[in-house]
Length: 153
Image (cartoon, rainbow, N blue to C red; front, side):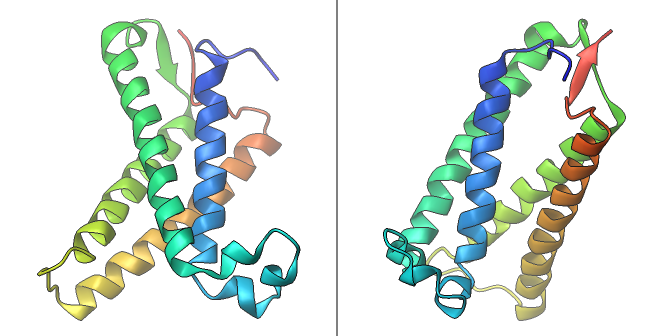
Protein backbone atom coordinates (compact mmCIF):
# COMPACT_ATOMS: atom_id res chain seq x y z
CA UNK A 1 0.00 0.00 0.00
CA UNK A 2 1.13 3.54 -0.67
CA UNK A 3 2.27 5.65 2.25
CA UNK A 4 -0.46 8.00 3.42
CA UNK A 5 0.29 11.72 3.48
CA UNK A 6 -1.01 11.96 7.06
CA UNK A 7 0.00 10.27 10.32
CA UNK A 8 -0.39 6.51 10.52
CA UNK A 9 -1.84 6.73 14.06
CA UNK A 10 -4.92 8.47 12.66
CA UNK A 11 -5.61 5.54 10.34
CA UNK A 12 -4.94 2.98 13.05
CA UNK A 13 -7.18 4.62 15.65
CA UNK A 14 -9.92 5.17 13.03
CA UNK A 15 -9.82 1.52 11.92
CA UNK A 16 -9.79 0.31 15.54
CA UNK A 17 -12.72 2.56 16.48
CA UNK A 18 -14.78 1.55 13.44
CA UNK A 19 -14.10 -2.17 13.99
CA UNK A 20 -14.97 -1.89 17.69
CA UNK A 21 -18.13 0.07 16.84
CA UNK A 22 -19.13 -2.56 14.28
CA UNK A 23 -18.62 -5.35 16.80
CA UNK A 24 -20.36 -3.64 19.71
CA UNK A 25 -23.16 -2.45 17.44
CA UNK A 26 -23.87 -6.00 16.29
CA UNK A 27 -23.62 -7.31 19.84
CA UNK A 28 -26.38 -4.90 20.94
CA UNK A 29 -28.66 -7.05 18.87
CA UNK A 30 -29.23 -10.47 20.46
CA UNK A 31 -26.58 -12.09 18.27
CA UNK A 32 -24.13 -13.10 21.01
CA UNK A 33 -26.51 -15.41 22.84
CA UNK A 34 -28.23 -16.65 19.71
CA UNK A 35 -24.96 -17.79 18.14
CA UNK A 36 -23.40 -18.95 21.43
CA UNK A 37 -20.63 -16.36 21.43
CA UNK A 38 -21.27 -15.97 25.16
CA UNK A 39 -20.17 -19.59 25.63
CA UNK A 40 -16.66 -18.83 24.36
CA UNK A 41 -14.33 -18.37 27.35
CA UNK A 42 -13.82 -14.68 28.03
CA UNK A 43 -16.70 -13.56 25.81
CA UNK A 44 -19.61 -13.77 28.26
CA UNK A 45 -19.68 -9.96 28.45
CA UNK A 46 -20.94 -9.84 24.85
CA UNK A 47 -24.33 -11.05 26.05
CA UNK A 48 -24.75 -8.15 28.52
CA UNK A 49 -26.52 -5.38 26.61
CA UNK A 50 -25.60 -2.62 29.07
CA UNK A 51 -21.86 -3.37 29.02
CA UNK A 52 -21.84 -3.57 25.23
CA UNK A 53 -23.92 -0.38 24.98
CA UNK A 54 -21.49 1.56 27.21
CA UNK A 55 -18.54 0.25 25.19
CA UNK A 56 -20.29 1.38 22.01
CA UNK A 57 -20.54 4.90 23.46
CA UNK A 58 -16.86 4.86 24.48
CA UNK A 59 -15.75 3.81 21.00
CA UNK A 60 -18.09 6.40 19.46
CA UNK A 61 -16.36 9.05 21.60
CA UNK A 62 -12.99 7.78 20.32
CA UNK A 63 -14.25 8.02 16.74
CA UNK A 64 -15.53 11.55 17.36
CA UNK A 65 -12.10 12.48 18.75
CA UNK A 66 -10.38 11.19 15.59
CA UNK A 67 -12.91 13.00 13.41
CA UNK A 68 -12.27 16.20 15.38
CA UNK A 69 -8.49 15.87 14.94
CA UNK A 70 -8.88 15.24 11.20
CA UNK A 71 -11.32 18.13 10.67
CA UNK A 72 -9.10 20.52 12.64
CA UNK A 73 -6.01 19.41 10.69
CA UNK A 74 -7.92 19.69 7.42
CA UNK A 75 -8.81 23.32 8.01
CA UNK A 76 -5.49 24.28 9.60
CA UNK A 77 -2.95 22.67 7.29
CA UNK A 78 -4.16 19.83 5.02
CA UNK A 79 -6.69 21.74 2.91
CA UNK A 80 -4.02 23.06 0.55
CA UNK A 81 -1.86 19.91 0.59
CA UNK A 82 -4.40 17.08 0.29
CA UNK A 83 -7.43 16.23 -1.79
CA UNK A 84 -10.08 13.63 -1.02
CA UNK A 85 -10.13 10.49 -3.14
CA UNK A 86 -13.48 9.53 -4.74
CA UNK A 87 -13.93 6.68 -2.26
CA UNK A 88 -12.73 9.03 0.48
CA UNK A 89 -15.52 11.48 -0.36
CA UNK A 90 -18.08 8.67 -0.25
CA UNK A 91 -16.78 7.47 3.11
CA UNK A 92 -16.76 10.99 4.55
CA UNK A 93 -20.44 11.29 3.63
CA UNK A 94 -21.24 7.88 5.10
CA UNK A 95 -19.36 8.63 8.34
CA UNK A 96 -21.19 11.96 8.60
CA UNK A 97 -24.50 10.11 8.20
CA UNK A 98 -23.47 7.57 10.84
CA UNK A 99 -22.50 10.33 13.27
CA UNK A 100 -25.78 12.19 12.71
CA UNK A 101 -27.96 9.09 12.97
CA UNK A 102 -25.96 7.90 16.00
CA UNK A 103 -26.45 11.29 17.62
CA UNK A 104 -30.18 11.04 16.99
CA UNK A 105 -30.18 7.57 18.56
CA UNK A 106 -28.43 8.97 21.64
CA UNK A 107 -30.92 11.85 21.79
CA UNK A 108 -33.82 9.40 21.54
CA UNK A 109 -32.49 7.51 24.55
CA UNK A 110 -32.43 10.57 26.81
CA UNK A 111 -34.99 10.78 29.61
CA UNK A 112 -38.09 12.84 28.88
CA UNK A 113 -37.55 12.58 25.10
CA UNK A 114 -40.47 11.17 23.16
CA UNK A 115 -40.27 10.93 19.40
CA UNK A 116 -42.62 9.63 16.76
CA UNK A 117 -42.18 5.83 16.44
CA UNK A 118 -41.87 6.06 12.65
CA UNK A 119 -39.07 8.61 13.02
CA UNK A 120 -37.31 6.38 15.55
CA UNK A 121 -37.60 3.35 13.27
CA UNK A 122 -36.32 5.39 10.32
CA UNK A 123 -33.28 6.55 12.29
CA UNK A 124 -32.55 2.97 13.40
CA UNK A 125 -32.73 1.67 9.83
CA UNK A 126 -30.69 4.54 8.41
CA UNK A 127 -27.96 3.85 10.97
CA UNK A 128 -27.93 0.12 10.15
CA UNK A 129 -28.00 0.62 6.37
CA UNK A 130 -25.22 3.24 6.51
CA UNK A 131 -23.12 0.80 8.54
CA UNK A 132 -23.60 -1.89 5.90
CA UNK A 133 -22.82 0.55 3.07
CA UNK A 134 -19.69 1.69 4.91
CA UNK A 135 -18.50 -1.89 5.15
CA UNK A 136 -19.06 -2.40 1.41
CA UNK A 137 -17.29 0.82 0.45
CA UNK A 138 -14.36 0.05 2.77
CA UNK A 139 -14.10 -3.43 1.24
CA UNK A 140 -14.18 -1.94 -2.26
CA UNK A 141 -11.40 0.47 -1.28
CA UNK A 142 -9.26 -2.41 -0.01
CA UNK A 143 -9.87 -4.47 -3.16
CA UNK A 144 -9.00 -1.49 -5.38
CA UNK A 145 -5.94 -0.84 -3.20
CA UNK A 146 -6.92 2.77 -2.66
CA UNK A 147 -8.02 2.74 0.96
CA UNK A 148 -6.65 6.20 1.81
CA UNK A 149 -9.27 8.90 2.30
CA UNK A 150 -6.97 11.59 0.90
CA UNK A 151 -3.98 11.91 -1.36
CA UNK A 152 -1.36 14.59 -1.93
CA UNK A 153 -2.27 17.24 -4.51
